[in-house]
Every structure is written in C-alpha cells, then in structure tokens.
Amino acid sequence: MRQHLMPTYQRLPVAFERGEGAWLWDQDGRRYLDALSGIAVCGLGHNHPTVTAAIQEQAARLLHTSNIYRIPLQERLGAELCRLAGMDAAFFCNSGAEANEAAIKLARLHGRRRGVELPTIVVAEGSFHGRTLATLTATGNAKVRQGFEPLVAGFIRVPYGDSAAVEALADDPSVVAVLVEPIQGEGGINVPPPGYLASLRALCDCQGWLLMLDEIQTGMGRTGRWFAHQHEDIVPDVMTLAKALGNGVPIGACLARGEAAALFGPGMHGTTFGGNPLACRAALAVIEAMERDGLVERAAQLGERLLSDFRDRLRDVAGVTAIRGRGLMLGIALDRPCGELVQQALAQGLLINVTAERVVRLLPPLILDDDQATQLVDTVTALIENFLTATSPAGTEVGAS
Ligand SMILES: *Cc1c(COP(=O)(O)O)cnc(C)c1O
Image 1 (cartoon, rainbow, N blue to C red):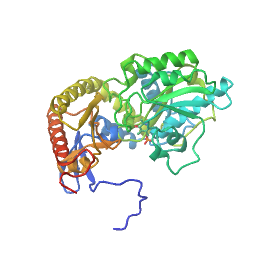
Image 2 (tube, rainbow, N blue to C red):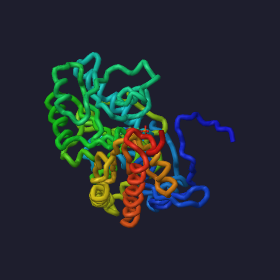
Image 3 (cartoon, protein in one colour):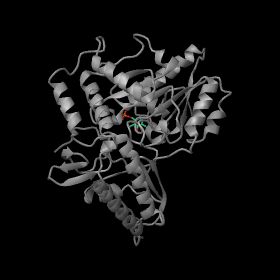
Image 4 (tube, helix red, strand yellow):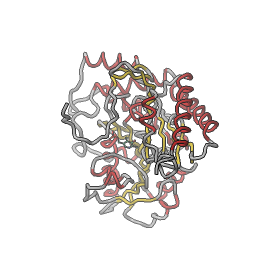
C-alpha cells in the first residue's frame, strides 16, 4: 500500500492492536512486554481501569468547551498538580514542546520585567526540549537543529551536570533563566552529580534567574518521586510536564511558582485545545490511581531492584560502560552503537529503546510486576551479552571484513 505519511519516523515493522497493563498485542495476536511505555507516556500501563473508566464517562458527558469559559476539571487538575509539586499556578497545553514554549515565554517576560532587552536562557549540552523552533533551538543535539536555521535567538549552552559552568555566566547581564532536565532522557539517561539542582537553585536565587526544570520525561513518578527535583529537596520556579500526565491522552502543563506564576496576563498566551475537560479528566484519574496504589513508591522500589539486578548481571561484562538511572528511568550504556538491539528485542517479544546511539533505554510502566521485571532483566541481559559477543566495538560484525 502506498504510504501517505511524511517519513518523519523510521518505524519498526509492527503495529499494536490492544494493550493490558505492561502487555501489548500486535495484529497477529503476538504478545510483547512493554518496557518503554510509549516513551514514558503510559506510566500506568495500557488500558488502566481507572483511566479508561474516567475517559469513557467524560467522553459521554463533555469533550471540549473553550478556555474562554471556566473549566472546573482544569481548575481541579491545576490544584492537584500544585499540591503535589509545591507550585502556585498551571497553564495547560497539549504536548511537551508546548509546555516548554510557555516556559520560554515566561523567562522572556521575567527578563523584560527586569529591564533586560534581549533575555538569554541557559540550556545544556545533550538536552532535549522538543521540536518547535524555540524548543529545538534549546535542544542540545545538532541533528535536531540541522536544516532549520535560522534558529531562535536568546539561548546559551553549557555542559550538563556542571554547575560551575552556569555560575561562570553570573556576570552576563542578559541571562534570565536556566532550563535543564533533572535527568536527561533522550540524551542518554544522563544523571547529573548529586547537588547539581540544589546548586542551580542557589545560583538562580542569588542572581534572580528563573530555575526552569523540564520534567516532561522525569515527572509523574517516573524516577521514584512525583517529580525528579524532589530528590534534592528543591522547588523550581517553573516546571514543565507532559508525557505521563494523561497516560496517553495528550496533555502538557507548565507550572510556575511565586513571581513567575503571575507573569502571564489575559491575552498573553493561549491554546484552543489545552486543558480541555477530557484531557484534564484523564490526568486527574492518573493522579488518583497513582496515589491510591502507591505507584510512586513502587517506581522507587522496583527501580532500585532493576538497577541492582542489571549491575549484578552486567557490571563485569566487557563492552558495558555504565548502568545508570533513577526509579524506572534506566540506561545501559555500551561501548558501541547498538540500535539493532531494538529489533532483536522486538523479535523476542520485548519493547525497548536505544538513545544517543549506544544507550539501551528502559522506561517500563510503574505497574510492572515482579515477574515481568524478572523477564525484563533476563531478556535484556541475554540480548546485550549476545550482541557484545557478535560485534566489535567499532560496531562491525565479528568475522565480517
Ligand atoms: C518528550 C520530551 C519533550 C517533548 O515533548 P513532546 O510532547 O514530544 O513535544 C520535551 N522534553 C523532554 C525532556 C522530553 O522527554
């Protein structure tokens, strides 16, 4: 059949028809263990009863009105997220990139208010913030930016995890905000040194800069706390969410605190779909199920088990260069490109991802059970061992000339 889709993705040759918890079934009825959760989206797994019931009920009641009217479900969701995050106000949108766009606009308003003509936001190497023009400019990956010049002005890039590099910008009067991920996801599950976020917090306080955290991948319990910055007992000025917030129903959020929460006035930002009753109802159901079932604690506990299992099994395997992560956001770095592991895992009925060319990325759902965790460790360990035996560090097959 001729394809009528723009080839923005090199898609794997499989299509899923049905899901239940951590399982997916393809069109031929074959079952797969999902250790990727639609890239950190389906944190509660597929077809979660609480979320499904909420969506069904809401769909039969009201899908959309408009942000020119009050939306009580949106008000409730804003209050819930602010309670969990210690923030003051939320703006709802439909994706991560949009949430970051809102954050970037807040930083610019913050700068203007301080009399900065051309406000600059500090961003990190290896970061990923989205595909719109401003967010791809903020993204620290040349492949994402390539071809889309001219880029958006007003960003300055520093190495990730290095608070001294940010501190070195303290004399730059154009800087108004710092935007980083608490753990870089697309960049390769890069965990910064302990104290990184706390140092950035202190620096931003001292300089009057906004600390803006992109928790689109790390948020909603993924790392074993509601939000990854809570591991360091700090609160950002601005935080963005999306991915797992609606468990698959598109919704993003930009939360802000203090002065940053009052920067937008009527007419300064907006969205047609953002925060509609259906999406907000789904997100409220996600929060309800996560609290009721203790899934944040579950992510912390299961994550520790997986990390220690993988370290036991793979630590001394030549070719494995790092095993890292927090909660259910795990990366196993190899000394060679390993994209083909994705297809090999698929053939074994397992969904994983490879990012930054040589990092096996695991983002299983928070509802993964102990047997599924065992299957995940066994399958991934065997796949990596076989792959490392069959290839050389340059990525060529052993025996091939
Ligand atoms: C996925 C992601 C985004 C982009 O989200 P979209 O919904 O695809 O626009 C931004 N930042 C981070 C950290 C992400 O993981």
